[in-house]
Image (cartoon, rainbow, N blue to C red):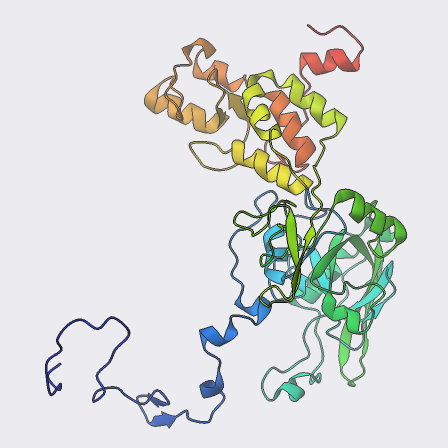
Length: 444
């Protein structure tokens, strides 16, 4: 501050810098020379305030799917065909397709697990139940936007392209490709269609956002010259999902029956739960048209309640050790199965490891703790609940506790999340009560 002609009277309330010391923002000093960035591409980059309304590029990931691991093969528990999201970042949060930008989720070492159809390659062909997908690569991202749209070199069967080949039930061949003897033995791949694909195939792609269209399997993959004259890898996908395709009449009826709405964080209705968000102007309504403008109309929003199956309700009834927990869960309404699973997971977080409880032991105080975590706690603090300090000496010693895993709760979690306990379960155990019901014997 020595350069100031007069000292400051107080601390500035906003951003401030000395006008004599402030440098030119267009000039970058390096060890070798001074670069003037005025008029270059860098100087034309928009400020943060200018990108607020540019959609997906400014969205931030706020959570990750913890129901299944990242490389999970097959459907995601609680997510059904026909569900959609406005932005790719929320597709990543749901676990359907983890990469927020890339079109293929996979690696060179493991089979690919999901893809997004966005019409990015001119060779793509979409027939709904079948489509031909073009691998990634072949584009040089240096140069103008027009130059980046033209393929400039051959694609290789590496990285994600190799992951797609590994998903096909055919020998790996990086020269000509391969055809599956039985395409249904290929690894299932989750397929999403983006609104961008509607430019070429509007009959199958959504008009807005990204939609989950079910499981597909690769029939064959091969190498051929593309429209630009360079080689591309192509993959023939065929649909293999029990739920109806969303572009069919049955699929549209299924979406209406399930009450699916596109998840959009900028409207009052939460597409993941179907409920009116807190702070909305009118309860039970949602906005249409220009949300930020004056041409908004309020319409009555349909609210759907997810109903657990009869088998799941019976399993919950048998879990008498957690009656209070299930009562708390079921007193609320859930529009989707995924919302119900998320609520259940929230109640079943181990108080020690803070993860979804594994090999759950239900204490007399109704708290659920991982068996291994509880044994460690007993070594340090004795027979005291790590959540409420309730004494559970009545359950016996540590060896006794290991044999008191709540099998009813394990069965429920495996019904909700099929991959639950895959690391420690060898065979699903059946309680005496469940066995009696299966055999038609009386239950106490």
